Length: 196
Ligand code: UDP
Image 1 (cartoon, helix red, strand yellow):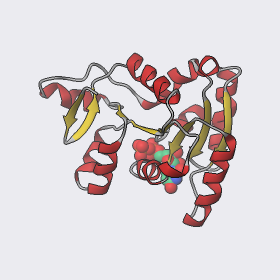
Image 2: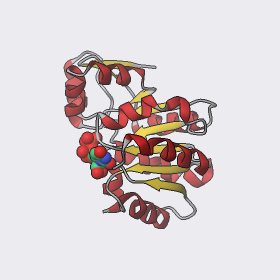
Image 3: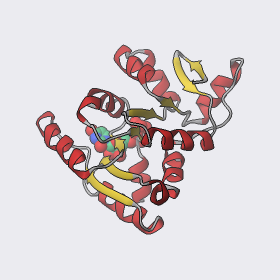
C-alpha cells in the first residue's frame, strides 16, 4: 500500500479507478476487509479518540472523501491524486455489480431509508443484488439478530451508514462474526443520498 499520513491517519494514494479495482479484489478474496472514507472532520475526530484512530489504522483502504483531506496532503510532499468520495466510489462499484457478482446489504440510516435506497438503486442498476437492509437505530441487544440477518442474506458487500465514528467501530468490532462479508464500507450519509 502507498499511503500518506494526514494527521497520523494513513490515507491511500489512490485514484477512484484504482479504489474501485481494489474493492473488486477484496470481494474476490477469502477474508473480511474494511474501507473508510474520511472527510477532514472525521480525521480531526481521530486526533482525540485513540480507539477510533487505532480502528482507522487497521482499515484496509482509506480514501479521501473530502477535498480538504486532499488539500491537507498537498502541504506534504507526496500529495493525494484526487478526491475519492465514498458516495461516488459505491456508485462505481454498483456499475460493475451484476458482472462481478456483488451482493449488497444496506445497514444504517433512519427507518425506511435503506429500503428506499435499495429500491432506487434497483431501478438505476437493473439486475443489481441488494439482498437485505436494516435501519441504523438499534440497541445492543438487537445486534446478534442483525448479524444473523446479514449472514443469512449471503451479502459480500456491507454498506454501513451509522455516522462516524460509530460505523467504523461497528465494522471493526464485528469483523469475526461476518464470515461472508468481503468488504464493509463506512458510507456515512450515502444511503440518504441514494434514497433522496
Ligand atoms: N445514523 C444511524 N444511526 C445512528 C446515528 C446515525 O443510522 O445511531 C445514520 C444517520 O441516519 C445518517 C448517517 O448515519 O444516515 C450519518 O450520516 P452523516 O452524514 O452524519 O455521516 P458522517 O459524516 O458522520 O460519516
